[in-house]
Length: 339
Image (cartoon, rainbow, N blue to C red; front, top):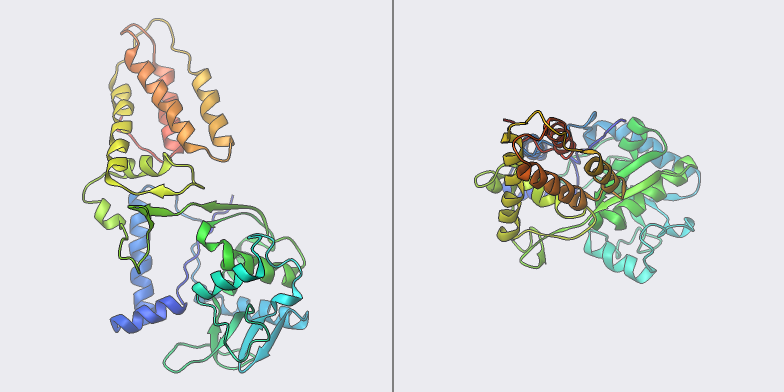
């Protein structure tokens, strides 16, 4: 398996924040990237095989845009290049949104429906003409920078090929981002872009979606001060990846209680008598993960096994059971101190 996790180091949000903080956009992007990588390591997340930065793939982006223009799916106007949504009869197949809803959501996420260069308000930017004070690169259409969606198509195509087995992301990216990735990649290459999409549910805080505008963001840097990586992982894994996750202190405190029996089970010494059969737990654990990565159910199985180990008498041989627990917890990214 090849695991790619991209870094978007140039987009409207980065440029806006760099201006607000009076920082160079590259410096700001690098600072954010380092903070993100530090948090990933602290959480014991698996490191990707590749972590490409968008600005290293400008040539690949231009090549895709040229293909789309040649095939009639894109057009140049005013030094910018746009994808023509009406030319793609399957646009919307991922989100299944109506045109009205597409416009509403796209407009909330940076679309400029009144752009005079557009043939259709829903058309999206592939290449944006240079604006004063913004970074730019040379292209066949003049100086400019890539649009948001084309970056991911280019990086995925270069590192994973024209068809990706699994593409993950937040459910808030289904439209317009992932929908537009599909349109770009499939119309440029003539092949399916993604075999399986996996969309993670949003985090909420006190009933509202976490967002910068609401000022209710909970940062890993703050959680580090109070909790261990295991506790945060258990809290997150106790919710199915597709479900909405409510970030409240009581729920995180409950995750602490969940980890305690695991630790207690590991501390218990094994006897030399009857062997505790681990097969039923092993079967149920992997069945849970094979069922759309049902981590809440998988954790419940391990809770049951840990309680079983704790309650067994001192003569029971629990060596095999503890070994399986260690393996299973490792699969979930949980590293307990072993006795």
